[in-house]
Image 1 (cartoon, rainbow, N blue to C red):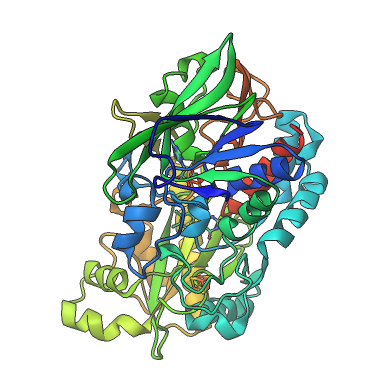
Image 2: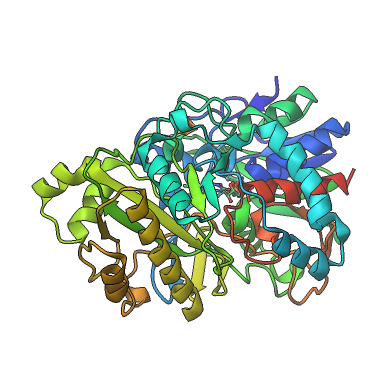
Length: 497
Ligand SMILES: Cc1cc2nc3c(=O)[nH]c(=O)nc-3n(C[C@H](O)[C@H](O)[C@H](O)COP(=O)(O)OP(=O)(O)OC[C@H]3O[C@@H](n4cnc5c(N)ncnc54)[C@H](O)[C@@H]3O)c2cc1C
Ligand code: SF4
C-alpha cells in the first residue's frame, strides 16, 4: 500500500525516508518520480484529500481542490483573487491542461542568470520531451475541441497569426469542458495519473490530509517535516505525522511554499528573498456574441491560442467559463437577466495572459493563511490592452459579431475600432482581475540577497532543504506554467540523485 490518509494515521507517528516532499502538484510529483526511480525512499505529505472528489460544480471544487477554499486574495494596487490547486495532483487536478514550453528566450535568460546550462533551451528541451511523453501532451483534437476553440483557430488562421489548436496533457479528453472542477472522465493526464503512479510503483508513499507546519532543523541542517493530519470534511485535527529525512523538499506551490516557510518560522533564516518577487501573469478577457451556438462551457476547456506579432510575452488563449459566469459577464456589461439567459449559448471568448513586470510578495498570517500583495506595472496593462485588441480582431475574423469585455464602462461593439476606442481610456480599477499562475516567490539564483535557492535547488542558508515548484522560477514565464514547473523540478531532482 502506498497511498494513505487520515484513516491510516490516527495516533502521533514518526517515520523515516531518504527524501520527504511537501506537496504533490506538478513540481513535487516530477521530483518524486525522479527520486523513486533512482531507488530512494520517498514520502510525500499532501494537505488535500487522497482521492479526487470531483463534482461538476465550483463549490465542491473550491472546498476540496482549491487552496484555502478558493478564497486567496492579493491586495495592493487592487484586489485580485489568486487560485492554486489542492489534493494528490495539486494544481494539475483542476487546471485546464494547457502544456506549453517556455519560450527559448526565457530559458536562455534563466541559463544566463543561473550560469547553469541545464536550463538552456537545448537541455531543458530534452527534459520537456521526457515529461511531455509521460503526461501525454498532444495537440488538441478538433473533434473534441468545441466551437469556442474552433472559432479562435479559424480567426487566428484568417489573420495569419501563429497558433491554432493548443498542446494539452489530455490523452483521453472527451471535450466536456470541466477541467477546472476536475476531470470526471479521467481523460486528463494530471500528475496523479502518471508521475505519482510511476513513483508509487517504485516504492514512493503519499500521505494525504496532512498539512505541514514545521520544518525540522538540527545542527544547522533541515532534517525533516512535521504536519497535522486532519479530517478532509471537517478539518478536525487527528494526529501529528513527522517524517525525518536527510533531504527535505518543499513543493507546496508559489503561494504554499513561502506561506509554509513563514508559518514554520524559518523564513528569516533563509534570507530576505523568501516570498518576494511574486509574478502572476495578469490579464483580462474579450468576449463576443455570435449568431450561431457556441456553448462556451463545452469542448476542450482551453484548447486554442495564438501569438500577436510584435507582442512577445502576451499569450491570448481560449476563455472558458461555466454558464453562471457567462450570465454574470453579460449582466455586468449591462444586459438584463432574462436577455442574458437568452444570449448565453452564443458567447465565445479569449483570455489574454501577460508575462508581468509587476511585483508582489507572499507571507503568512498568524494562523497560517497566505498574505499576498501584488502591485501592477502600468506597461503590463498596456500590453494586456494590445492583446485584447488583437483578440477582438481574431474573434470577429473567426465568425463572432459583437464584442464586449469584463471591463467596467464597456458596452457592446460591432467593430474592433469602436472596441479599441472604448478600451483605451479604461484603467486597472475597471478590470476584473484574476490569477491562476502565481510564481517566482522563492527564486532560484546565485545571489542570496535576491534568491532563496541555488541552481541545485538547495537553500543558500539551510543545507538539506530543497525547493522545487513554480516558486523557484527566476522570472515570469509568459506561458501557462505547469510544464515548466515539471521541467524545473525534474532538473533539480536529477541533480540530487
Ligand atoms: C484553475 C487553474 C487553471 C490552470 N490552468 C493551467 C493550464 O491550463 N496550464 C498550465 O500550465 N497551468 C495552469 N494552471 C497553473 C498550474 O496548475 C500551476 O502553475 C501548477 O500546478 C504549479 O505547480 P506546483 O507544483 O508549483 O504547485 P501546486 O500545483 O499548487 O501544488 C502544491 C501542492 O502542495 C500542497 N500544499 C500546499 N501547502 C501545503 C502544506 N503546508 N502541507 C501539505 N501540502 C501542502 C497543495 O495542496 C498542492 O497540492 C492553472 C491553475 C489553476 C488553479
Ligand atoms: S475537457 Fe477533457 S480533460 Fe478537461 S475535464 Fe473534460 S474530458 Fe477531462
